[in-house]
Length: 124
Image (tube, rainbow, N blue to C red; front, side):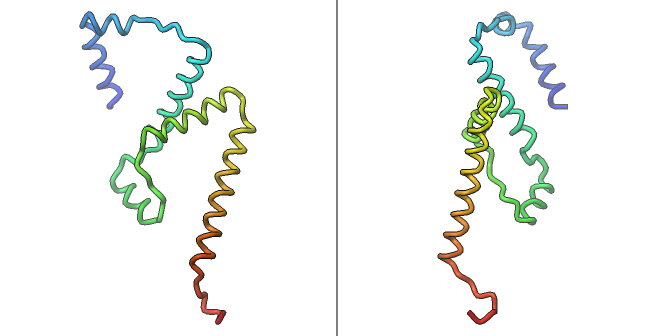
């Protein structure tokens, strides 16, 4: 429904000479620029699809302990960098970054557990 409205607005704006000039403009992008633009569009699409848009879904996810964070421009750019690496074929770098992130998270959990010991009732 929103996309139809956007198309209608663009259609109406196309009658304005300055807008028509912009719409008709062709971009002479290099291969790298096209790749980066594609990665950015993939990241925007990813974030558009993964944003929680429904209030009741948000409440359910929050109640289930899902770690929800606000969508930030930096998160979109981070995703674009990952998509660009994928499109360039840098799979090993992406996997290494993922493993590093998992290892860092595990170390953080381990550090937290050592700093906050709890009794499980076992009489330790």
